[in-house]
Length: 199
Image (cartoon, rainbow, N blue to C red; front, side, top):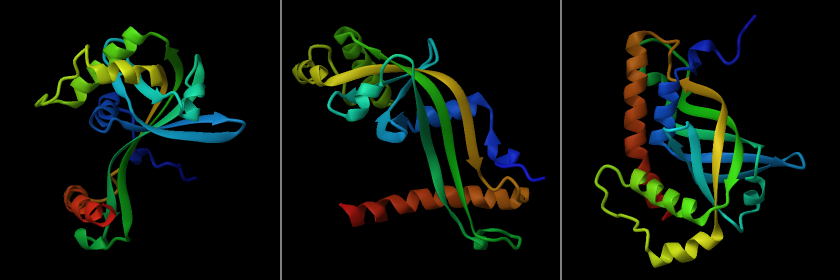
């Protein structure tokens, strides 16, 4: 009897999963209303002190009404991904796709405090400006004072973690190393070409 997903494509090491969340903080946030998914893409920051994810959503976004106490959300964080050609392997293989994803479920709570929201925006900016901190969001920034009237802050308590690391683990160590090198190469070269086409 086959097992799906294959255990070697699952990663339960929370440190690995946190590394994805911290390195690629733009999450796909999925709520359900009337049996239909509502989806927004939002940066979420992991708060070390209590293990919660902190985010902000435009009050005019329909999903903001679902970011209330104890409603469940599903989150997807996406790491690098690419097509793997059999040509990169030293053995005879079929084409495949390698990727890193982290799936989380959690319960969400809206934070109705402008002071907490302002502090959260400052901390998120500080985190995302690492390591050079070329911009500092000051507490008395007049644009932020206006913007906070249109933003809802929320916290997500994480209920479950699932890591999907499909990285050619079922191949030989040499082929796995080649697949890793291809994942790095493909992600580095694809961005400029893609952006030249869409901008």
